[in-house]
Amino acid sequence: MYIIVVGGGKIGYYLTTTLLKEGHEVLILEKDPAKCDAICEHLGSVVVRGDGCEARTLGEAGTERADMLIAVTNEDEDNLVACQVAKHKFNVPRTIARINNPKNEALFKKLGIDVAVSSTNLILEHIAEEVPTHPLVHLLTLTGRNLEVIEIKVPPDSAAVGKRIRELALPPQSVIALMVGKWGAIVPTRDTILEPEAQLIAVTRIEAKEALREAITASKGA
Image (tube, rainbow, N blue to C red; front, side, top):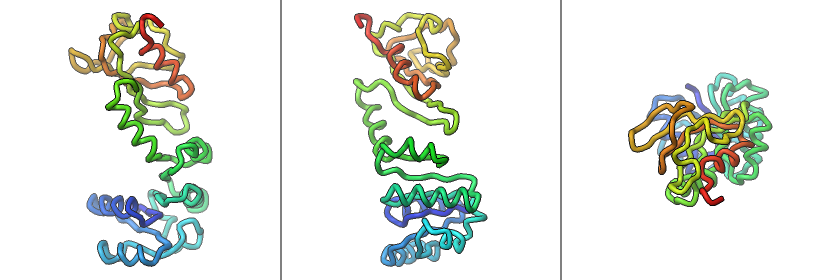
């Protein structure tokens, strides 16, 4: 694939290094001449000095033949503009934007960015995996379908323990797709009984995520 990376900072540099090793054709667009020189010294002529938000720069970079554009600058506004210009002017099929402020994630998705990656949220999710008081972990957002794939751990004191899935008050359009428990991983049915400490992979509407968490994790005394 031909991939354009907007932003030659640490993320852009290491991302490009990985993509090159995987055999992709990659071009970095970076405004800072010092960063351009450093990238060129280490990776060769895979960097062009220019503003990835400008249509002229993107045109000179051959964006019309790009399979993907990834914007990873330190400025959310620049990442949004670069992705929008790539998608709407050059018809790039896939755009990915780094988000520095998690509050901007909904806006990016609303404006048509295919994948919006919040480094803050990713860190919080990894923390949640290690903290037992945070039983829900976001895994994936299905763009354009208002759905999320999440992981929920069943607490030992949950009122859901010992119940069949059909007995749970799951929100509409929420599905438990996988259960990993003491017997290994299974695709549950409506008659599957929830085990304490089981890991559940579920698909739910974004606005129903908290209701699903409550249905799985609420304690018996709640």
